[in-house]
Amino acid sequence: MMTTETLGARLQRMRKQKNLTQDEVAERLNVSPQAVSKWENDQSCPDIMLLPQIAELYGTTTDILLRGEPDVPETRLAPPEERKSFHQMMLRIRVNSSDGDIVRVNLPLALIKICLESGLAIPQLQMHNEIIGNIDWKQIMLLVEQGVIGKLVEVQSADGDTVEITVE
Image (tube, rainbow, N blue to C red):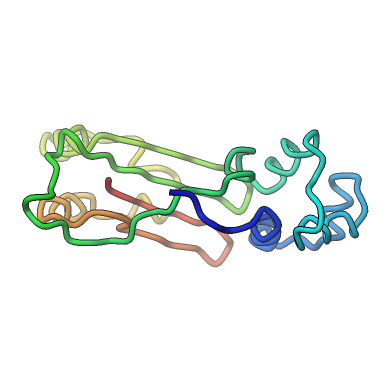
């Protein structure tokens, strides 16, 4: 299910997340500040040729820029009859750094469980990001075994980095 956020609202939100003014965006894209204002107020849309530049400026993809991100399920406790086996579940890590880096990691929970039980390191779970490197993955796995699914971690650091960890 996709979000109902308009393109203009999404452009404005992404600009603000990058701490940019409309004038700065206009300058970087070689358009007028009025054009940026019109985009954000849904009075017009950016030229299709500008979309890759806008996506790069905001540290996203053109797909997410145009369609928005899918709704992330809230954390919930699945009843026993709805629980999937570890072999059917995925751990999804999403990192958006304030520097514009975008990291997406999707790992099968069965692989993570095997690595944790055997003491093997999983580089994707020990990224340079302080937040991810300090997570107690064994505790996360225990929660999932008890039926907790959805968004398990959502953090935004003071310098603008965002991290989301979801189990589906």
